[in-house]
Image (cartoon, rainbow, N blue to C red; front, top):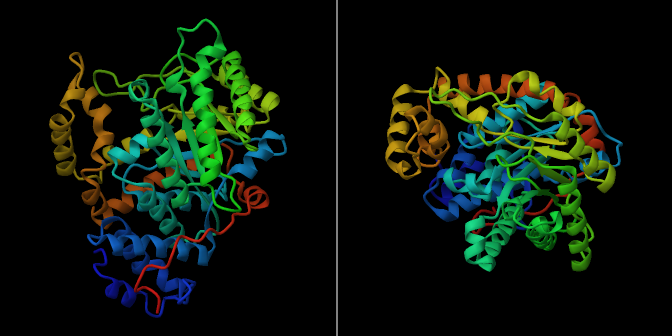
Length: 465
């Protein structure tokens, strides 16, 4: 159960974790920490009724993580090395965790240890923050607590994925939509998200005759938000920023579109006096988020345009010094596709829905809970249903939106069920890490990335002893 009061929180730490008057945290018994105490702290960080206790648990988790050597970090130095072609041969998996976040993050880190992998990213998109009911501070606490629980040492890469402009909201009130994303950037960076993907590709307007005009709003907003990131980043940290030229699920990107975006973007950041721009560029090559459900609920085969991905990645790297191109919407692709991403020089790949599908379809996931989830979605998301959709298609498309309303029930699954599900997830993570070439990257990451410890705010009142 979550810890309820500050007194109870202090008592839970006794003999295991000491908080000094200056806020310095000392771990006296890591073996005792990596058990029920860590589990209780993260549950308190997510579910405590008292906001002060919840915030104190999040503060503690970050300070404890620092104390044992698990530190939020930017992947920027590694991506700069990739841009210089000093590092190559792998594609970094960025894993969106929508539910059971602590348990799933632990499975990711167990897989990373088994594969000696240092290059792996935890991420959550702007839309996911909403429908999974996980604000950045909560998500970061779950990832860092998982690192503590699993004895992880070194950088922990946490990323804001698709901090995306709504074209409709931007058209109605550009300043308000821009301010909303800027506020989210500042919130995320403050929580330890030192990797941020800005997605203003939704603002591309193909009605203009020139590529530069089509991309203008995209590169202007991306540069503007890069400035917000740079002003928010703490001393000693250069946040890795990503841009995007092709909205996922739309027309495939081209090298000339990439050049038009980058040339305009570089002019904009120079005009604003920004020394560091983006480190990577997301492109569209034929995928869609979550895949395309067929009437029977199966996912349609996707013909990903690997030659286009490679051409775009080589332009990004060779002409602009970026790490390369980023592939979105890939988790439902056939296994045999994943070997190609490193050879096509993709620097990063985003993976989400395939893991969600594994959780929901797992034999250990309670059928009664799944039935209640589906019934809830039929009512709560009925306005999203298209006239020609089958029930299977509708449920497949909307199941992601159950992670928020059913968060506590998923966290409270019996241990046997959670262990069975996360064991299969771990096996999947290990498989993908092998195919993406990130096995054995721990030493490479440690050589290039030396994370700076950023203190997590003032000591919560009543916690020091």
